[in-house]
Amino acid sequence: MPESADQSTSTLTEKDLSAWATLARFREALAIARKDFPDHRSFKDPKRLLQLGDYLCLFLLGLLNPIARSMRGLIQASRLPKVQREICTRKVSLGSFSETQALVDVALLERVFADLSAQLPDRAGVPAALRTQRWMARDSSLFAALPRMTWALYGGGREGCLNNAVRLHVSLDLKKDSPSAVQITPGKKCERAALRENLVAGDAYIGDRYYGEHHAFFTHLSRRGNRYLIRLLDRGMEPTILEELPVSEADKAAGIQRQAMVRLGKNDTLSEVLRHIWLRGINGQELLLVTNLRAGELSAADAALLYQHRWQIEYFFRWLKCLMGCGHWLAESQKGAGIQLYLALIGAVLLELDLGRRPSKRVWELLQWYLSGTIGHETLAELLKAQLTSEEYARARRNKKRR
Image: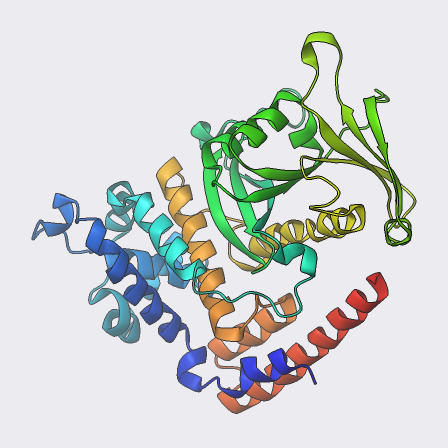
């Protein structure tokens, strides 16, 4: 049995698995972060009955519990005695809950998220290619917004139809398999522009074809001191070959067809000198990758492995949309949407700290059955141990097959 699965469940107690314990840990992290964020004067007003911590905990409860999944549902929950004892001391009105979002400093939640993410350990069995430096899988995902959320203009979709969306930009730390930096914008925000604003010195980034559309972006990354591995658009444009590079047997086994030092574009649009890697994917599709790392710093085989791990960010977005209550909006303003997404991310990190990994759909269902009172703590611990062990075994088989 995998050690990580056993350790993640053997020490869990009923107190640890309670939604109230998760909310208590959130309050602790919030209290630490608030030392650098003084309360808005409105929260000090004696007429303000709904305080910041109560509001955020009630909001987070809506993302974690299996029953109250709307703002009105949370307002109804605030009348329950235990909710008043643990969260908000008194019942909350619809107007009070709605207007409080305007008083929250989203930067405070950003700090809480960063502090909690820093507590996550590196994943066990991380490939050597991921340990050389801090590799970030970079991507964004759209969350459908209501037509009246006009600030979230996207513009895609069927012609003549309103198509508003909130865009979540994420840098996923591949060693931790957890987001390290996020940015929440209207749907039309350019992904490259968002990354320019969020670059962290020393980090290395893995991106899909969108990041390879403009060759000047590669130069910008290099000048900022960032390494990159980015897939190119396949438009039939041949690069200017400067030097062919050898392909080792290990590279060939990883699907590498060819590698060379090249420049992209023509005339005044020539890119910086970079390494071009031709990779044959598992399904036979040719992938064109470029990097500013030399062969001595990153082998072509390791580059192929790194790009394969980029898919972790796609799994993360799918998990966030399906399991963390991000398919509907409890708040519709730009700040309110930011609060909800940050709280969903914080909830994801708290669950990962409890379980030692991000819960799968089956694990999440077990937790929801427990929180709704359908199964008890002992049954939950037994089922969790079996499920996590099964998932670790399946993951190990997939990794062995890939190698």
